Amino acid sequence: MATTVSPYDPLELTELLKRRGHIRGNPVAISMFRDEIPEPYAGQMVEPCAIVRQAMDFGKHVFVDATHHSCVAGAWQAGFIEPPLEISTGSYLVDNTPFFTPEGALKVKTGENVLPFGTVRGIGAAPLDQVPAGVEIDTVVVVCEPLYASMIGGVRVAIDGTPPRGAAGTSLCGELFALPFHDRNVIITTGDVGGRMFNHVKPSEMFVIIPVEYLPYLANVVGARPNLTGLMEAIKPGYTAERDRKRDERAARAEAAGVAVQISGSMTTTMQWDDEARAVLAKAPAMIRDFAAPTLEEYAREQGYELITLEVMSEQMDSVGMRLDDVLAMADDDAAADELAGDDLADDLADEPPDELASGSDDSDEASGDRAPVNASASTTIAATPTQVWARLAEVGQWGSWYSDIRNVKVAGLVGSDAAFSFKTGPASVSATVSRWDPPRHLEFIGRSRGSTATYRFELSPSGDSTLVTARQAMTGLAARAMRPMMQKIAETSLPEWLEALKVICEAPAEELDTTTDAGSLS
Image (cartoon, rainbow, N blue to C red; front, side, top):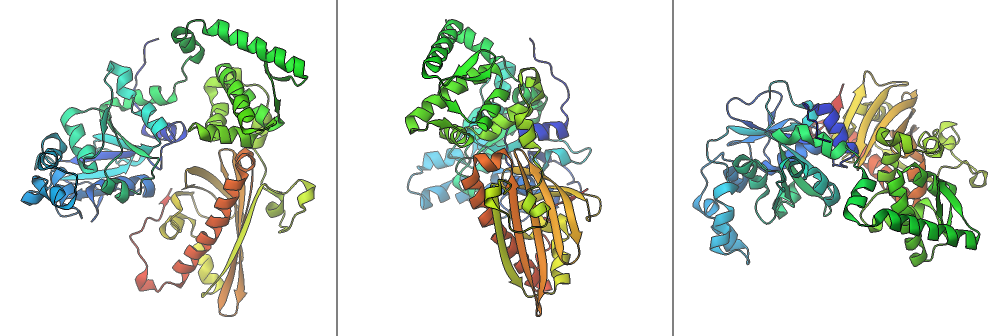
């Protein structure tokens, strides 16, 4: 079937890249401003390549130009300035690093690695779904893990067979701004040491730079579900016969062992699976089940496991660079609706808030079975009145300005009882609802992300001239059960950090507050 291309919707493409491409933060639209710099873009005294992080992690509209930057080398490669000779020849690299030859340094600082001087007045960055009307986009930049970089970066391969350009060891500024200008190809790059550092890129992450002309094709690449059975039959002679033979052998071994477990249709396993693991696998398309079941069982036997659980599934996926979240996403995919079987997973994804917080009881009986898999609490004393602390805590849209682990806050209307808002924390997108609003004593909200439901409660109590603040978190759902040790550690770490950030912002003198820090987006 021929690929159908239609104009892309920035909102839909953003959501798709986050959900299926597992990108970090926002996809970033890079715009080359040749004349005036439009509002609401604000000049930043940062390294030119660092405008990616400003838009990606903080949702800002920013630009750099000849007077707004903090890196001469980056400003030269972005075409803003005529640089000192040591920059344009690359001699500063030869003088300060033991591995660059004069020839190598000169080449990475000239030619297609540099935007010709005067080409643009400035370069801007903004979240793709927040680009102002009338502003033209030149490229879109995303940051993600290599598995997803290969998928997103293959967009031009699917069109005309041209592979993406790989880049490493040169300047990220040149790769972001100059290379796309010169050859208009997709670029997959590690970025250089400085570019990775300035953008806070993790060791497992890469940059993908996509010229705007390929965006209409990107939804087909990221969102489509290939016919995996057809592909396997085409590239592996005898695949169907071999698959059926192995299935029959597994069924025979299961019958002989007396442990046959029906997964879906005629498929059986040869080991014991608990109900949750079986429900997740049952949601996957048949082709994935055919591959995943024997692979998981082989891994379990190698590790000495007698029962396959969600923990075993998550561990095996981690070992090959995959995520349990991908399976959960597959279960939610409308394209696989005809192949879904059972409702167990849907019930888990719709978990009610943990009873011990939702009911107002701080202590719960472990033996009752009602306790959430993940529970954490933390306290701190803040040198401010409860009213002053509440003023900071209740201003939800400003959380991202003083607590770095929360970003992209969006609040629907006024914050209060039953108010809805959303935010990003780590790789998770959270949709939240205020469930208790009792100024200045109690703030409670319920946050839902893929595979988990968490209740957060903040309690403020007077303590002399200060305020004792206690935070509690309880989480349920598949993600909480499948990855409980990791999720528990995250909760035990993040709550004290959240309270420490609240303490700092409440106790800071007014003249020391940084009013330029991202405050989240209000809508």
